[in-house]
Image (cartoon, rainbow, N blue to C red; front, side, top):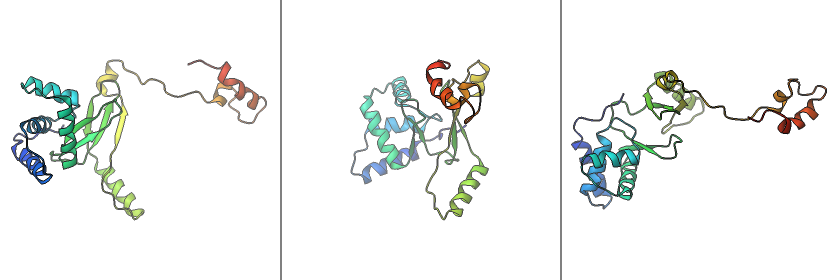
Length: 191
């Protein structure tokens, strides 16, 4: 697990320098949001950040949090992730291992980071084989965490039954295959 830096002041200074270079003021509100992001090992949503800020007696509008996160992402100090949850998560890029991948539990929302030398090698070899110069890559694997599996969670069925399988014949061109396949959507299993 990645841990936030013990002393975030150097990173706040870098963010402050970025803001000044962009002709933007370094406000206490921006520093508070940046501090909350830099201090956490988690992949935080805007809701998470709002809660952390309120727990520290900092009351900011969500628009201020969103705008500050946008600046942090543009500065390169924070990465934005969309794990398909309907909202984005943010993580600082200040760890000792900035190149990592994610496992996302579809039951609990837990995000597990991992690094793989083998994946890195595959990326480099594939890019070289195609004369490609990669700038970055992402790998996100969705599924069920060990804890979710142990608590009885299961993966919901997604998709439809193939009409050929629904006929029970398993033959694409055999007798009755075409007419059975045409009848399958209305007469088959309703799940």
